[in-house]
Image (tube, rainbow, N blue to C red; front, side, top):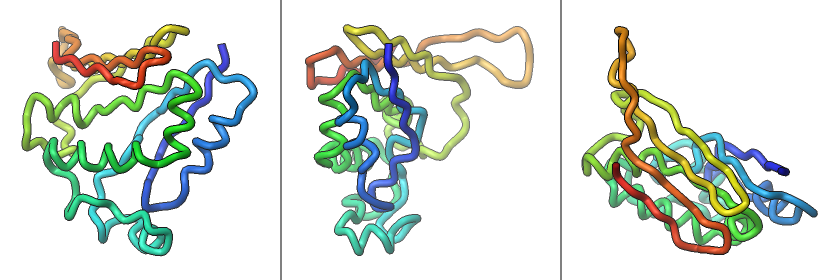
Length: 165
């Protein structure tokens, strides 16, 4: 299996040339995105000056704080042709951790650290699946682990399945 690994995709901070390079690889079976698939900054936040020069200003009028803000930003990223090419080239979960949490609480702040846990990635030729697993506590033992949301992309399918558990 050949994996491409990406992280830190700040739309207003520059062009997504790395995604185009991934799409142009002679072989890649899956793309693993380690985090910050998108950023919550508003139109005047981090990267704003470059974004204005490149015509890549965040469409949401403020920093993302609601699920509606998240989906607006997610849609903006998904319109980028280089990102689209990388998604079309190989299974590539964009692991919307913020959306998974926000699906349970419409007003959650994406920088909030109340939810503790990890993402379990399962990559096969048929699909890429990310399970958001929360731990019940980080200050005591014993603790429990629960899968609270699952995100899956199937090869050849442009739709995304987000399921709350």
